[in-house]
Length: 232
Image 1 (cartoon, rainbow, N blue to C red):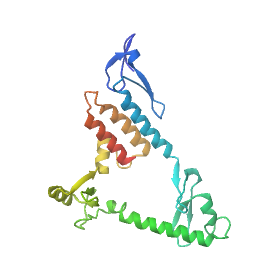
Image 2 (tube, rainbow, N blue to C red):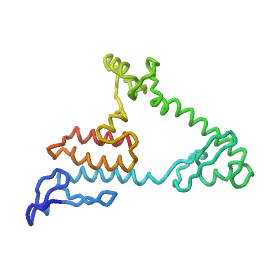
Image 3 (cartoon, rainbow, N blue to C red):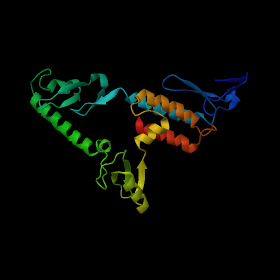
């Protein structure tokens, strides 16, 4: 913090010079301490809570066998008889042929394989649709990231730019999810950025976008948060 005089300091949010007694310290999950004025304090605490919730969930994962939520350090990869690689908890790992006791392994392994197959099928119909760039409207291949569109009848579609524009023209679009490419551009990061780099970029951009700063506004602040939510 830059000291202005013996009784005033600059707010880390908006950069304005305020009286020391009007500043409140907000501690971020990474230990960074921000001195905020009364107007910036709520925004800073909101960001701290959002980042804290991300940190709390980062050390846990889902077992692909029993689907339970367990610490990531307890998860281990295993290869099923058909060659499928799964990540499972110690309990499910014991039931996989070739790992631990063989008793009852057949039934559990079959269940795990079924769950994995169903999950793969779901991913192919949703998550894998975007990398392959197949528009769900015109069924044509697209060279750029598709738009995740929710229509007024609550259907979810993956649309190419032309189909998205046509849907908007017809007035059938309820909402459009921010594309990952747009989110990366807002946070000024690369496609291969790590979770830590995404978080650091968010902390940097959210300060500049703060509505109490000359460089920021309410819309810019919300845009940066939306971009982080899209990528985290």
